Length: 103
Image (cartoon, rainbow, N blue to C red; front, side, top):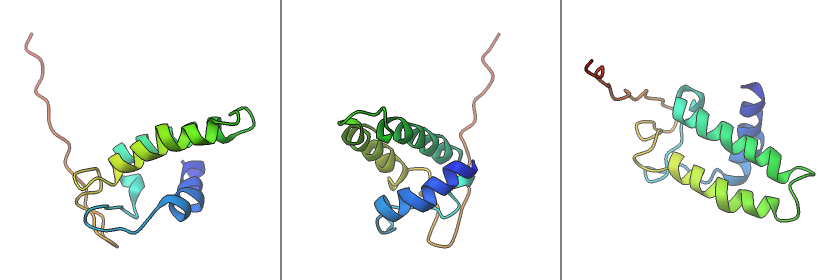
């Protein structure tokens, strides 16, 4: 988690973060949102693979097109995982419940 946190705060947000608005929310405590952690971890792994020495000449372009855009759009969506959070304020969201499948 330390490596992911370093990447998010040191590269992702400074380069791709954009301004926080009600239409594009972000939570400064993003690690408290399990969906965000899962999506950002996958984005980080893809970044390592596609922008590294074995990523090829088109790897970075593929990362931007196939991974960065869709993940940031999902995370920053007004109804996404940060929808209840405001600048300087984290609000946990309740996950939906599921009843047990009848035997």
